[in-house]
Picture 1 (cartoon, rainbow, N blue to C red):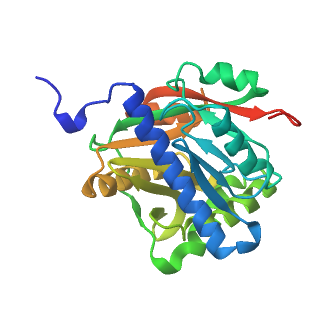
Picture 2: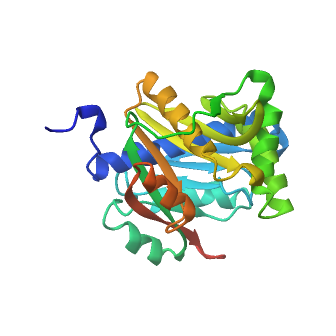
Length: 278
């Protein structure tokens, strides 16, 4: 018997790339707009050039980059110059996140303009309505308005096992994220105690899942499975038929996602403009 339409995995093509890259761009723009509203001294801003979305969240922010380069059509020299001016005018490095489905000339043009590859990321997808096994002892829910600090502190505590610096960064990042328009933040609780976090951004019929963090003492108990199930149910109820995640290739995050029905759509390359070029 053929799979029901809502359970079908999408074909990896340029249309899918446009959906996925557009969704991640929209989520990051929502964060940048929240930053501009809450911390105007940062000078956070975004722009669009030939379908490419460029965003600035501070010179050192991982969100300071573009999405969609070459996915919505070929760019000419003037387009590249406009994008580069957006970043260089803010004393920020120029980074482009590039899908392998970008127009064929994209890589050659990046090389010719002095860019070099610096990072890879795997984009994973799954139908939003596939069931997820979970531990019923864990309660996962969307946070209430007054729980933003609790969410960001829990996220920071989860990342704190890697470094105190990262914990501080994630807690500060979380306090902006919880107030970004269109971002839904979720907590997992065990006996009323917050142990894990996750977030969800919706763009059309695609849900971007991010913000995964679990405090060290609660790992291995299914908190992230409960958060995945809660977010997918939330997304499906609002018309999303596809969920996406982004992970480092070959990482534990990718393996865990694959165990829960995610499949690799493609692996992207982040390109950086060499200093003094452009």
